[in-house]
Length: 255
Length: 274
Ligand SMILES: Nc1ncnc2c1ncn2[C@@H]1O[C@H](COP(=O)(O)OP(=O)(O)OP(=O)(O)O)[C@@H](O)[C@H]1O
Ligand SMILES: [Mg+2]
Image 1 (cartoon, rainbow over the protein chains, first blue to last red):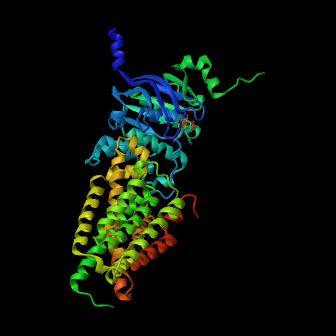
Image 2 (image 1 turned 90 degrees about the horizontal axis):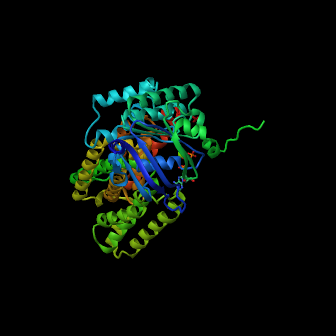
């Protein structure tokens, strides 16, 4: 009983029968989703294209309003506490296209992650810039401090987006395909970085359609297909159950 | 060169400075937020509104504000459904607004009215009162304060609206303020620059600054400087040539933009461009 209560309190994300329908659509992009994520979990969300992974992340941080069910993050209802919740969530967005003439420098983009956290009518101070520098060092991008964002390669840009989330020093990370555009070495580095973050305490939710890229430190896996959760549990359970192979349409070679 | 009373000269100069400043800062937002279509509609709605003011004989400033606000509400990105393509905007709204403006101007009776009608069309220093300059000055202070006080939020929003929202910024309110300020800048500058040309003053200076700078802070500083310089140069040019002031300002700013695109240091080093 007491133990149960403790668990409830340290539940970071809770969705109960949550569905999200995009404006103008009839079919929900995620349907009756139940999720319970505890502080410090490292959750990987896998599923084929269009299965609702991005929609799930954006429902959690409230950028998309869920249309039915109940959702809370940090014990606060999502829709009515959106910006308070979002200040504590770092988001690495998927498939971001950048205009090559975009007039922003890397340091400013990384700093922009802290905007909400710093708060209105306050200016970034020395500690904020330290956090920015530290984040850029952690993704190995410190030499591009004043580099125009439009001049980066796809992978470098992805690292800047990850640094942007790091600089926010959030309690929860939502990472949508963080390995997009990264080569094997960089994947490995970012995977280690995610493990470091996990060890330090924050909660991570990472989306991937590639099972082989799931970091070994991942504690839970959620498998999505056509907007529903078709499997979830501890990483080893889910991998052994074969539900991922089914959702992703992978066949064992018949020899 | 026509001789102009000193007081009028001062009013017109100050008017040019503030119009250049407000419109070109609004332009930074309009360009970065892909609100070009909305800015375009608001400018021409303001023009139709000003023409309506001439018709019903009240200060065109008021009706310009009213019309551009209506356009803003109808088209606002805040309403998020306004994913209008430029073709649609130009095809329907632009032609509709110009048609309305011409009908209003055509209906306006009397000699005096046709004089003020022409001024609304391409702007005139004689149309600008001390009050207009005062409004523009107040708006300039408001816009500059907005940019300074909310610089980090603005940068974040202009980099990417979704990421700004995800970082906990209330982007809805910021968009609303930006759309509203753009409407005011357009309406207040209309008498000086003219309804057909005010949009150029929004787009040209910031597009010029874009050709040179990678750093958003420099865009934010140089766009208004270029806007003010275009207005002053245009004003001087119009005194020399006796061209309408609005046309002169637009010629100067378009020339600056063209030269800048040609010599752009940025384009030459940008990825994936020749
Ligand atoms: N803005 C939108 N409006 C309407 N439908 C949308 C929108 N965005 C996504 N959808 C639909 O919602 C469903 C889920 O999309 P979502 O982007 O969440 O998938 P995903 O799992 O992230 O896919 P991917 O692996 O390709 O990124 C899809 O069927 C998609 O077509
Ligand atoms: Mg996705």
